[in-house]
Image (cartoon, rainbow, N blue to C red):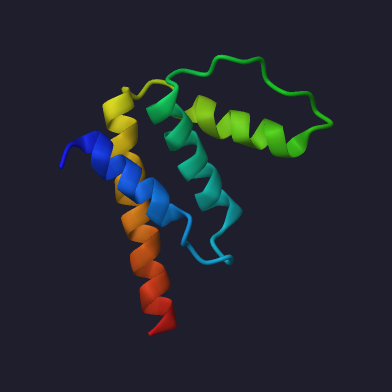
Length: 91
């Protein structure tokens, strides 16, 4: 399985994360996903009155230096970690 195929598989698995996944972890995943699929940030930072969009933009900007392959690999690792934590918590 290629890195891209594995990334796509874990992107689907990320949709099954529990609702109590922290916003911090969701933002980490968002930033890595955007970096992996689009590359460096390509939009201006949202205004102060749009806190949600601004937090997402900041999460993406935080991983801007990573290659798309690094972002895919880090995304897979993070989803695995969160799925393991969710399984341990429900056990």
